[in-house]
Each structure stands twice: as C-alpha cells, then as structure tokens.
Length: 104
Image (cartoon, rainbow, N blue to C red; front, side, top):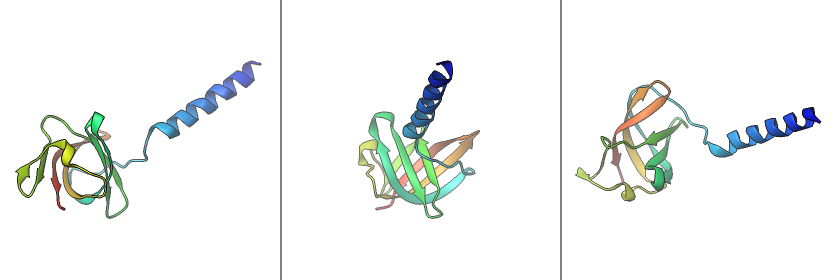
C-alpha cells in the first residue's frame, strides 16, 4: 500500500514539474536578438527564442528599460511574434533583462 502511494506521489510530482515550466536556457551576459515566444503580463515576464533556438526567460524588474523606435513604452506593447533585441545580465542561473528593444 505504501509503495502504491509513493509511486502515485512521485508520478504527480513529475507531471507537475513538466506542466509548470518551459524549457529555458541560461546564456552569458550580453545582447541577443530573437522573437517573443510568450508574454505573461501578470508576471511581467517574457520568453524570447533566439536565432540559435535558445529560449530565454526574462522577468522584468523596475530597472528594465523597454523601448520601441527609441521611445520608452509600457510592458503592454509586447506581443508574441515580435522581433526584439535584449540585453541581459547573468546572475547565477537567472537572466535579468537590462533593456528590451522592440524591433518591429
């Protein structure tokens, strides 16, 4: 009986792990171009897919600068499918977006 309960809990934990997250990559600090794959407005978070098929998970901070045509814009200007240039700073296994430029 205990073995069955353990197997059920283990299976549930594995399913929860896969259901909760995207597969993301950590890159070195620098500037990258890519396409917005997903926008999560309630978390001020975006996923950007780079040309070399890496997915960057970026949580905006109060210091993140978001621009289009050289002008500051609101987070709501971001949409899936847009081309962007992101400058990120690697902090451990996390990427902090310094700036995000909407290119189109």
